[in-house]
Length: 196
Image 1: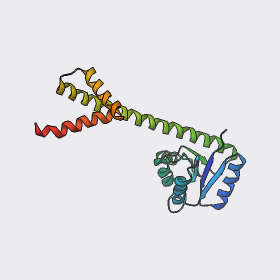
Image 2: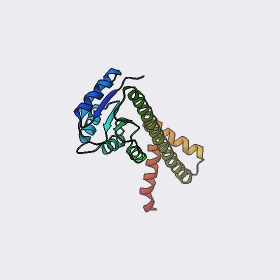
Image 3: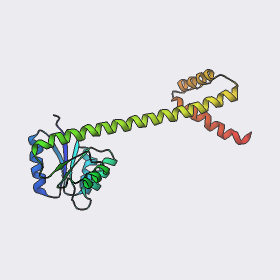
């Protein structure tokens, strides 16, 4: 089992103290404590814990709102602490980006698996988003290069291979990505078009 840096957010100081004891007994480090959702978000941004344990009911910003903000910014995985385990709550927590939850009173043997699951799901989520971003960038690059290639082929009556060779040569000479060369060609064509 891994050792995590944990942010605890609960408006009850006794519960925070109990959670700290349980977490430290399991070899985890509590890096911050908050008694409201606003402070939980602020601490998650500044401390970048491995996991945030948030209570549902807190002042100023409830745990679900804080979980949504922390999840939206991909600061860390959120494990919700709750006295509720009904389906509507679970759906709401899932929509807020909660990756695991613990029902109060929290038992020591449940904490480790919940943290592990949340961390694993968070890593998968971040990896999928990274892959999606890379795929989107490749598609966008392919589209720009395809349009620039077509422009060069029409303008200079050259083959596809020659158009690619010219763009690649410019990219190497200028030390810029091929996409930048293709974009520059398309912009130049747009500027020149009204003159024709």
